[in-house]
Amino acid sequence: MLSVWDPFADLNRFQREVEKSFFQGRNRPADFAPNVDVHEDEEALVLRADLPGVKRDDIEIQVDANVLTLKGQRKLEQESDKRRYHRVERSYGSFVRQWQIPTNIDATKVDASFADGILTLRLPKKEEQKPRKIEIRGNEA
Image (tube, rainbow, N blue to C red; front, top):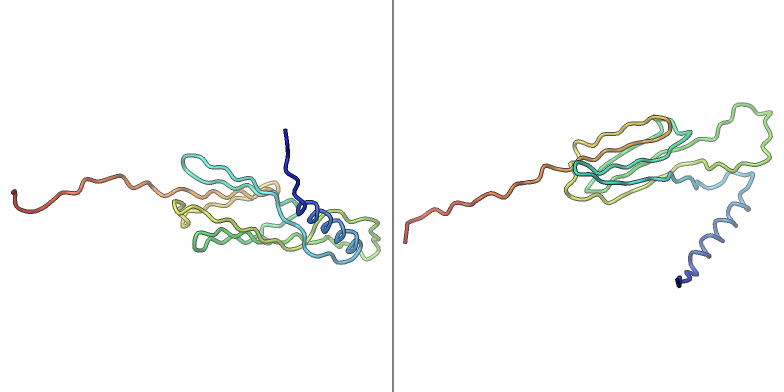
């Protein structure tokens, strides 16, 4: 099977590797972005975000004009000044993820739960409006 080469994918990967090597051992720019699964069933749209090491108080969720925004922060643990790091590979910092949500979502009934480092957002669908018969008023002709 043929595949199409995307030169920009390689360029983006190269740029990330250069940034990692340049900022290694220093305060790196925020490059933490949680992985998110999105699925839909008959009743709701469900998002599950992996947020290990993030405290519940460091997470903010907003719905505004059909845009769902997930903001948060994972902080570097600094328990002792005597600790000397030889390598820091886990990502830390602030993150923002946004999704355009369908208009059939009832934003007033969004439910969020957080357990074992996984944030689950349940966005229920609005009740479908049933077709109704329109009565025609007037004189018989």
